[in-house]
Image (cartoon, rainbow, N blue to C red):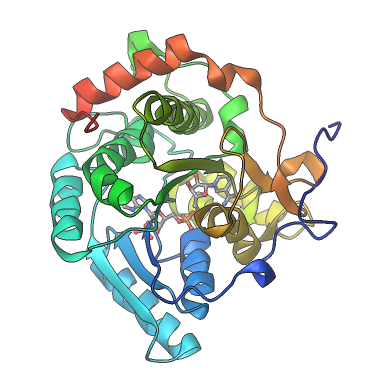
Length: 318
Ligand SMILES: NC(=O)c1ccc[n+]([C@@H]2O[C@H](COP(=O)([O-])OP(=O)(O)OC[C@H]3O[C@@H](n4cnc5c(N)ncnc54)[C@H](OP(=O)(O)O)[C@@H]3O)[C@@H](O)[C@H]2O)c1
């Protein structure tokens, strides 16, 4: 792939070496008990930030917190709030707890996801599981926390995927549940495209309403996390395991750099897409990546917005 952007962070790209002291800053990360979210939490905590994980599993969350405190010291300011993105009621409860307990949100990092789920499953509210967890759950969370983020002059970071351009490359409005053509990969790609299109549409609506929240989109390239191991079918699990033994796949820690950068770095262009810029944009120095123009189709994005408001029963406060 021809590179179109020079890396503004130099040859090594963005790395956590650029981080300043983050004492007093508060970051919310969804799905932070493992993978890129866990590594992002670790990097932010190491710089003195407060991190609240929004995780679905209590046991895994307690273990993650113990591991982080063991590695960083007992002063590490990390806690968790239980939230299952596969149930709108759970997202609402978690958001209420956040609003009641957190006076400030410097960034909400929408990191959690499921991927390549082998067969059509549904969330508690009857949505196809990948779209339900990855997009509708996060849409609702962002809407419910928006005001606190606005008051904090904070940011929303949406963790996308290169998969956005590997599926049907549009939103399947006539069959959002994929009743007719369910396909583990295409349906995952659909959910990640929905997340990315939502993010750019949110930028537009924030601008049109003279609001102050910044929205960034990134992706972790190909990173050795539990994403495929936990969700994918046997064939996909074997393929990814074998790929993870090659230089095509990077560490989960490196996979966390783009989301940490988007949560902290000043003067980033919002209408951009950040991640590894090397081979196929799967690994390599973190910077601005090439992005396909169809993600900016505002007719589709507006339709998706209306659909998401209808499905979640929640508007943004503007
Ligand atoms: N790894 C890659 O190569 C790759 C490539 C492209 C994009 N991404 C994106 O990177 C992000 C991070 O993924 P990862 O690779 O770090 O995967 P991961 O290791 O599987 O972590 C995913 C996290 O999401 C959580 N999660 C899943 N379903 C949830 C739900 N219903 N409610 C709340 N949390 C839920 C998981 O919790 P449990 O531990 O309880 O399951 C876990 O904490 C995702 O947005 C993914 O789409 C990853």
